[in-house]
Amino acid sequence: MLVAGLMSGTSADGVDVALCELKGAPGNLSAALLHGATFPYDPAMRQRILHCCDPIGSSVDEIAALNVDLAEVFAESALRAIQQAGMSVEQVDLIGSHGQTLWHNVTADGKVSASFQIVEAAVLAECVGVTTISNFRARDIAAGGQGAPLTSYVDWLLLRHPRHWRAVQNIGGMGNVTFLPPLTDDSAEPIAFDTGPGNALLDIAAAELTDGAWTYDRDGQLARQGRVNEEWLDELLSHPYYSRAYPKTTGRETFGTAAALQLLAEASKRGLDGNEIIATLTALTATNIADAYSRFAPASIHEVIIGGGGRHNPVIVGMLRELLAPARILTHEDIGMDSDFKEALVFAVLAYETWHDRPATLPAFTGARKSTVLGQITPGDNYADLLRRTWLG
Image (cartoon, rainbow, N blue to C red; front, side, top):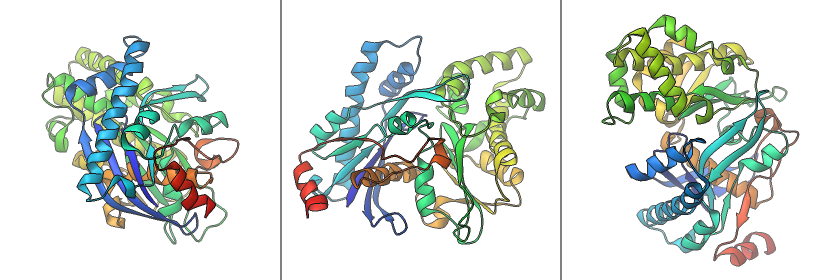
């Protein structure tokens, strides 16, 4: 099947589209990226998204409008990517859309009661004409899980090492890790959870400290000019999230704009300059990841595969090389996968599994009572034909 995976992450930078050819079933499933494209949001749209993540400043009418408007952006992105690939819409069987997370509701005891992703699937199915699968997190949460991290199931299917334990570390707006036992170990359970803030605090701080000239610390240039304030870093690492047992997830609700602005105010009181602030928040990203490995890795980790936007920050990667030694630090490219479109590929795979009525997560990853078939199906123009070809013979 040809499936388009659509993804917009916590950082709300833009829409990633992965056109993927999928074959087989778990145990012998293959996922090939045929074409990937990223379509950045214009500044006004990005500001609308970040504004609607604010439970105090946003309103229901703004969220309702954004749900439709952003779906039109997703649809346009999908159509442009299909055209870039030299394909026709008629060749695409499914769309798997993660949408845009506005709120991930974690209760005081660490459970997730709800997770809210927008991007109206009906608009996607209507504008593109392709059957669309969306709202992947809700079913896992209904089964008692965290609804995340969903990438871990695809890591489990595609990225286990023949002989060694691997960690697959995403560094997006938030960080998440999957600890994968080797293929030779049939008894060990995989583990997955959010490690904490990835780029979110850094991006907000960079924008605030440069009056919007920078939306992130390009190539770690700001961090390189500052020194890490170890005392403040130690205080930041005392946040209770880091010591909370897994399964656990987090988001902008805990480590987003409000938290970043509060941290900037604290740093100002300490007399830190902008580069010291960025250097320390960069160290926080690397150190909270290493701390999670120290606390929760079930075995010695031989390789760490880094993905997400954080892999482009050489300061973060350099710190991880030191903190996680002697583990080898790799990128997805080192194992034949495109890091930039990994998460979009994930939602193509999840849509493929849903269409085939197969569970697409494990209780070990999310803490759910059972594995479940994820997502909701919105028929497109190709729905009847797709049923005939894939189910009715």
